[in-house]
Amino acid sequence: MSKSNNQELTPMRKIFYTWIPVLIVIIDLATKYWAQNWLQKQPNKKILVIGEGVTFTYLENRGAAWGMMQGKIDFFVILTAVLIVLFLVLIARTPSQLRYRPILVTFLMLVGGAFGNLYDRIFRGYVVDFISFDIIRFPVFNVADIFVTCSFALLIYLILFKYSEQDLYFIPLFGSKKDKKDQ
Image (cartoon, rainbow, N blue to C red; front, side, top):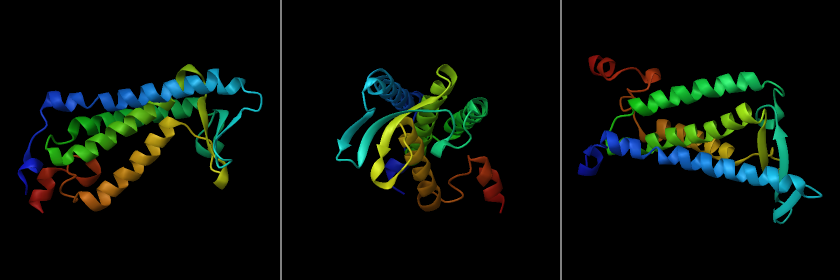
């Protein structure tokens, strides 16, 4: 194993990575502010970005993706808060070796994206969506959704292809390090 994979992230260095979700939330809230205060006021409420395939279209989403479960804000606030706490626990439990940095950053991106939408649900009563891929009739989404979706896909990739089951001992689903050594 290479020396760089055995190096440790000090607790302060691990805390340093909190800039990731903070930056995601700032970007997400800034773009939603722009959408709400400028895009919403446009006469046709649709701005062409890349031809007619990608547009900015203001939408207030009071449900989940694809408009499912409209009006269930309380459910989504609780669910998102629980998931954020779960990922914060996983962040705290992530080993300090540098080889775990990809999964640590992935957890942090998930938290940032989830918190961006949680903020909207708590303080606005809906999530501001504005990015639309009209070419494939994809649901309108926002910056937080991009981070949640991409980091979740990255997490699946990391679990399936980068880390062994023994490497993931710190995730309760995979058991503990002690259990893996006893087998």
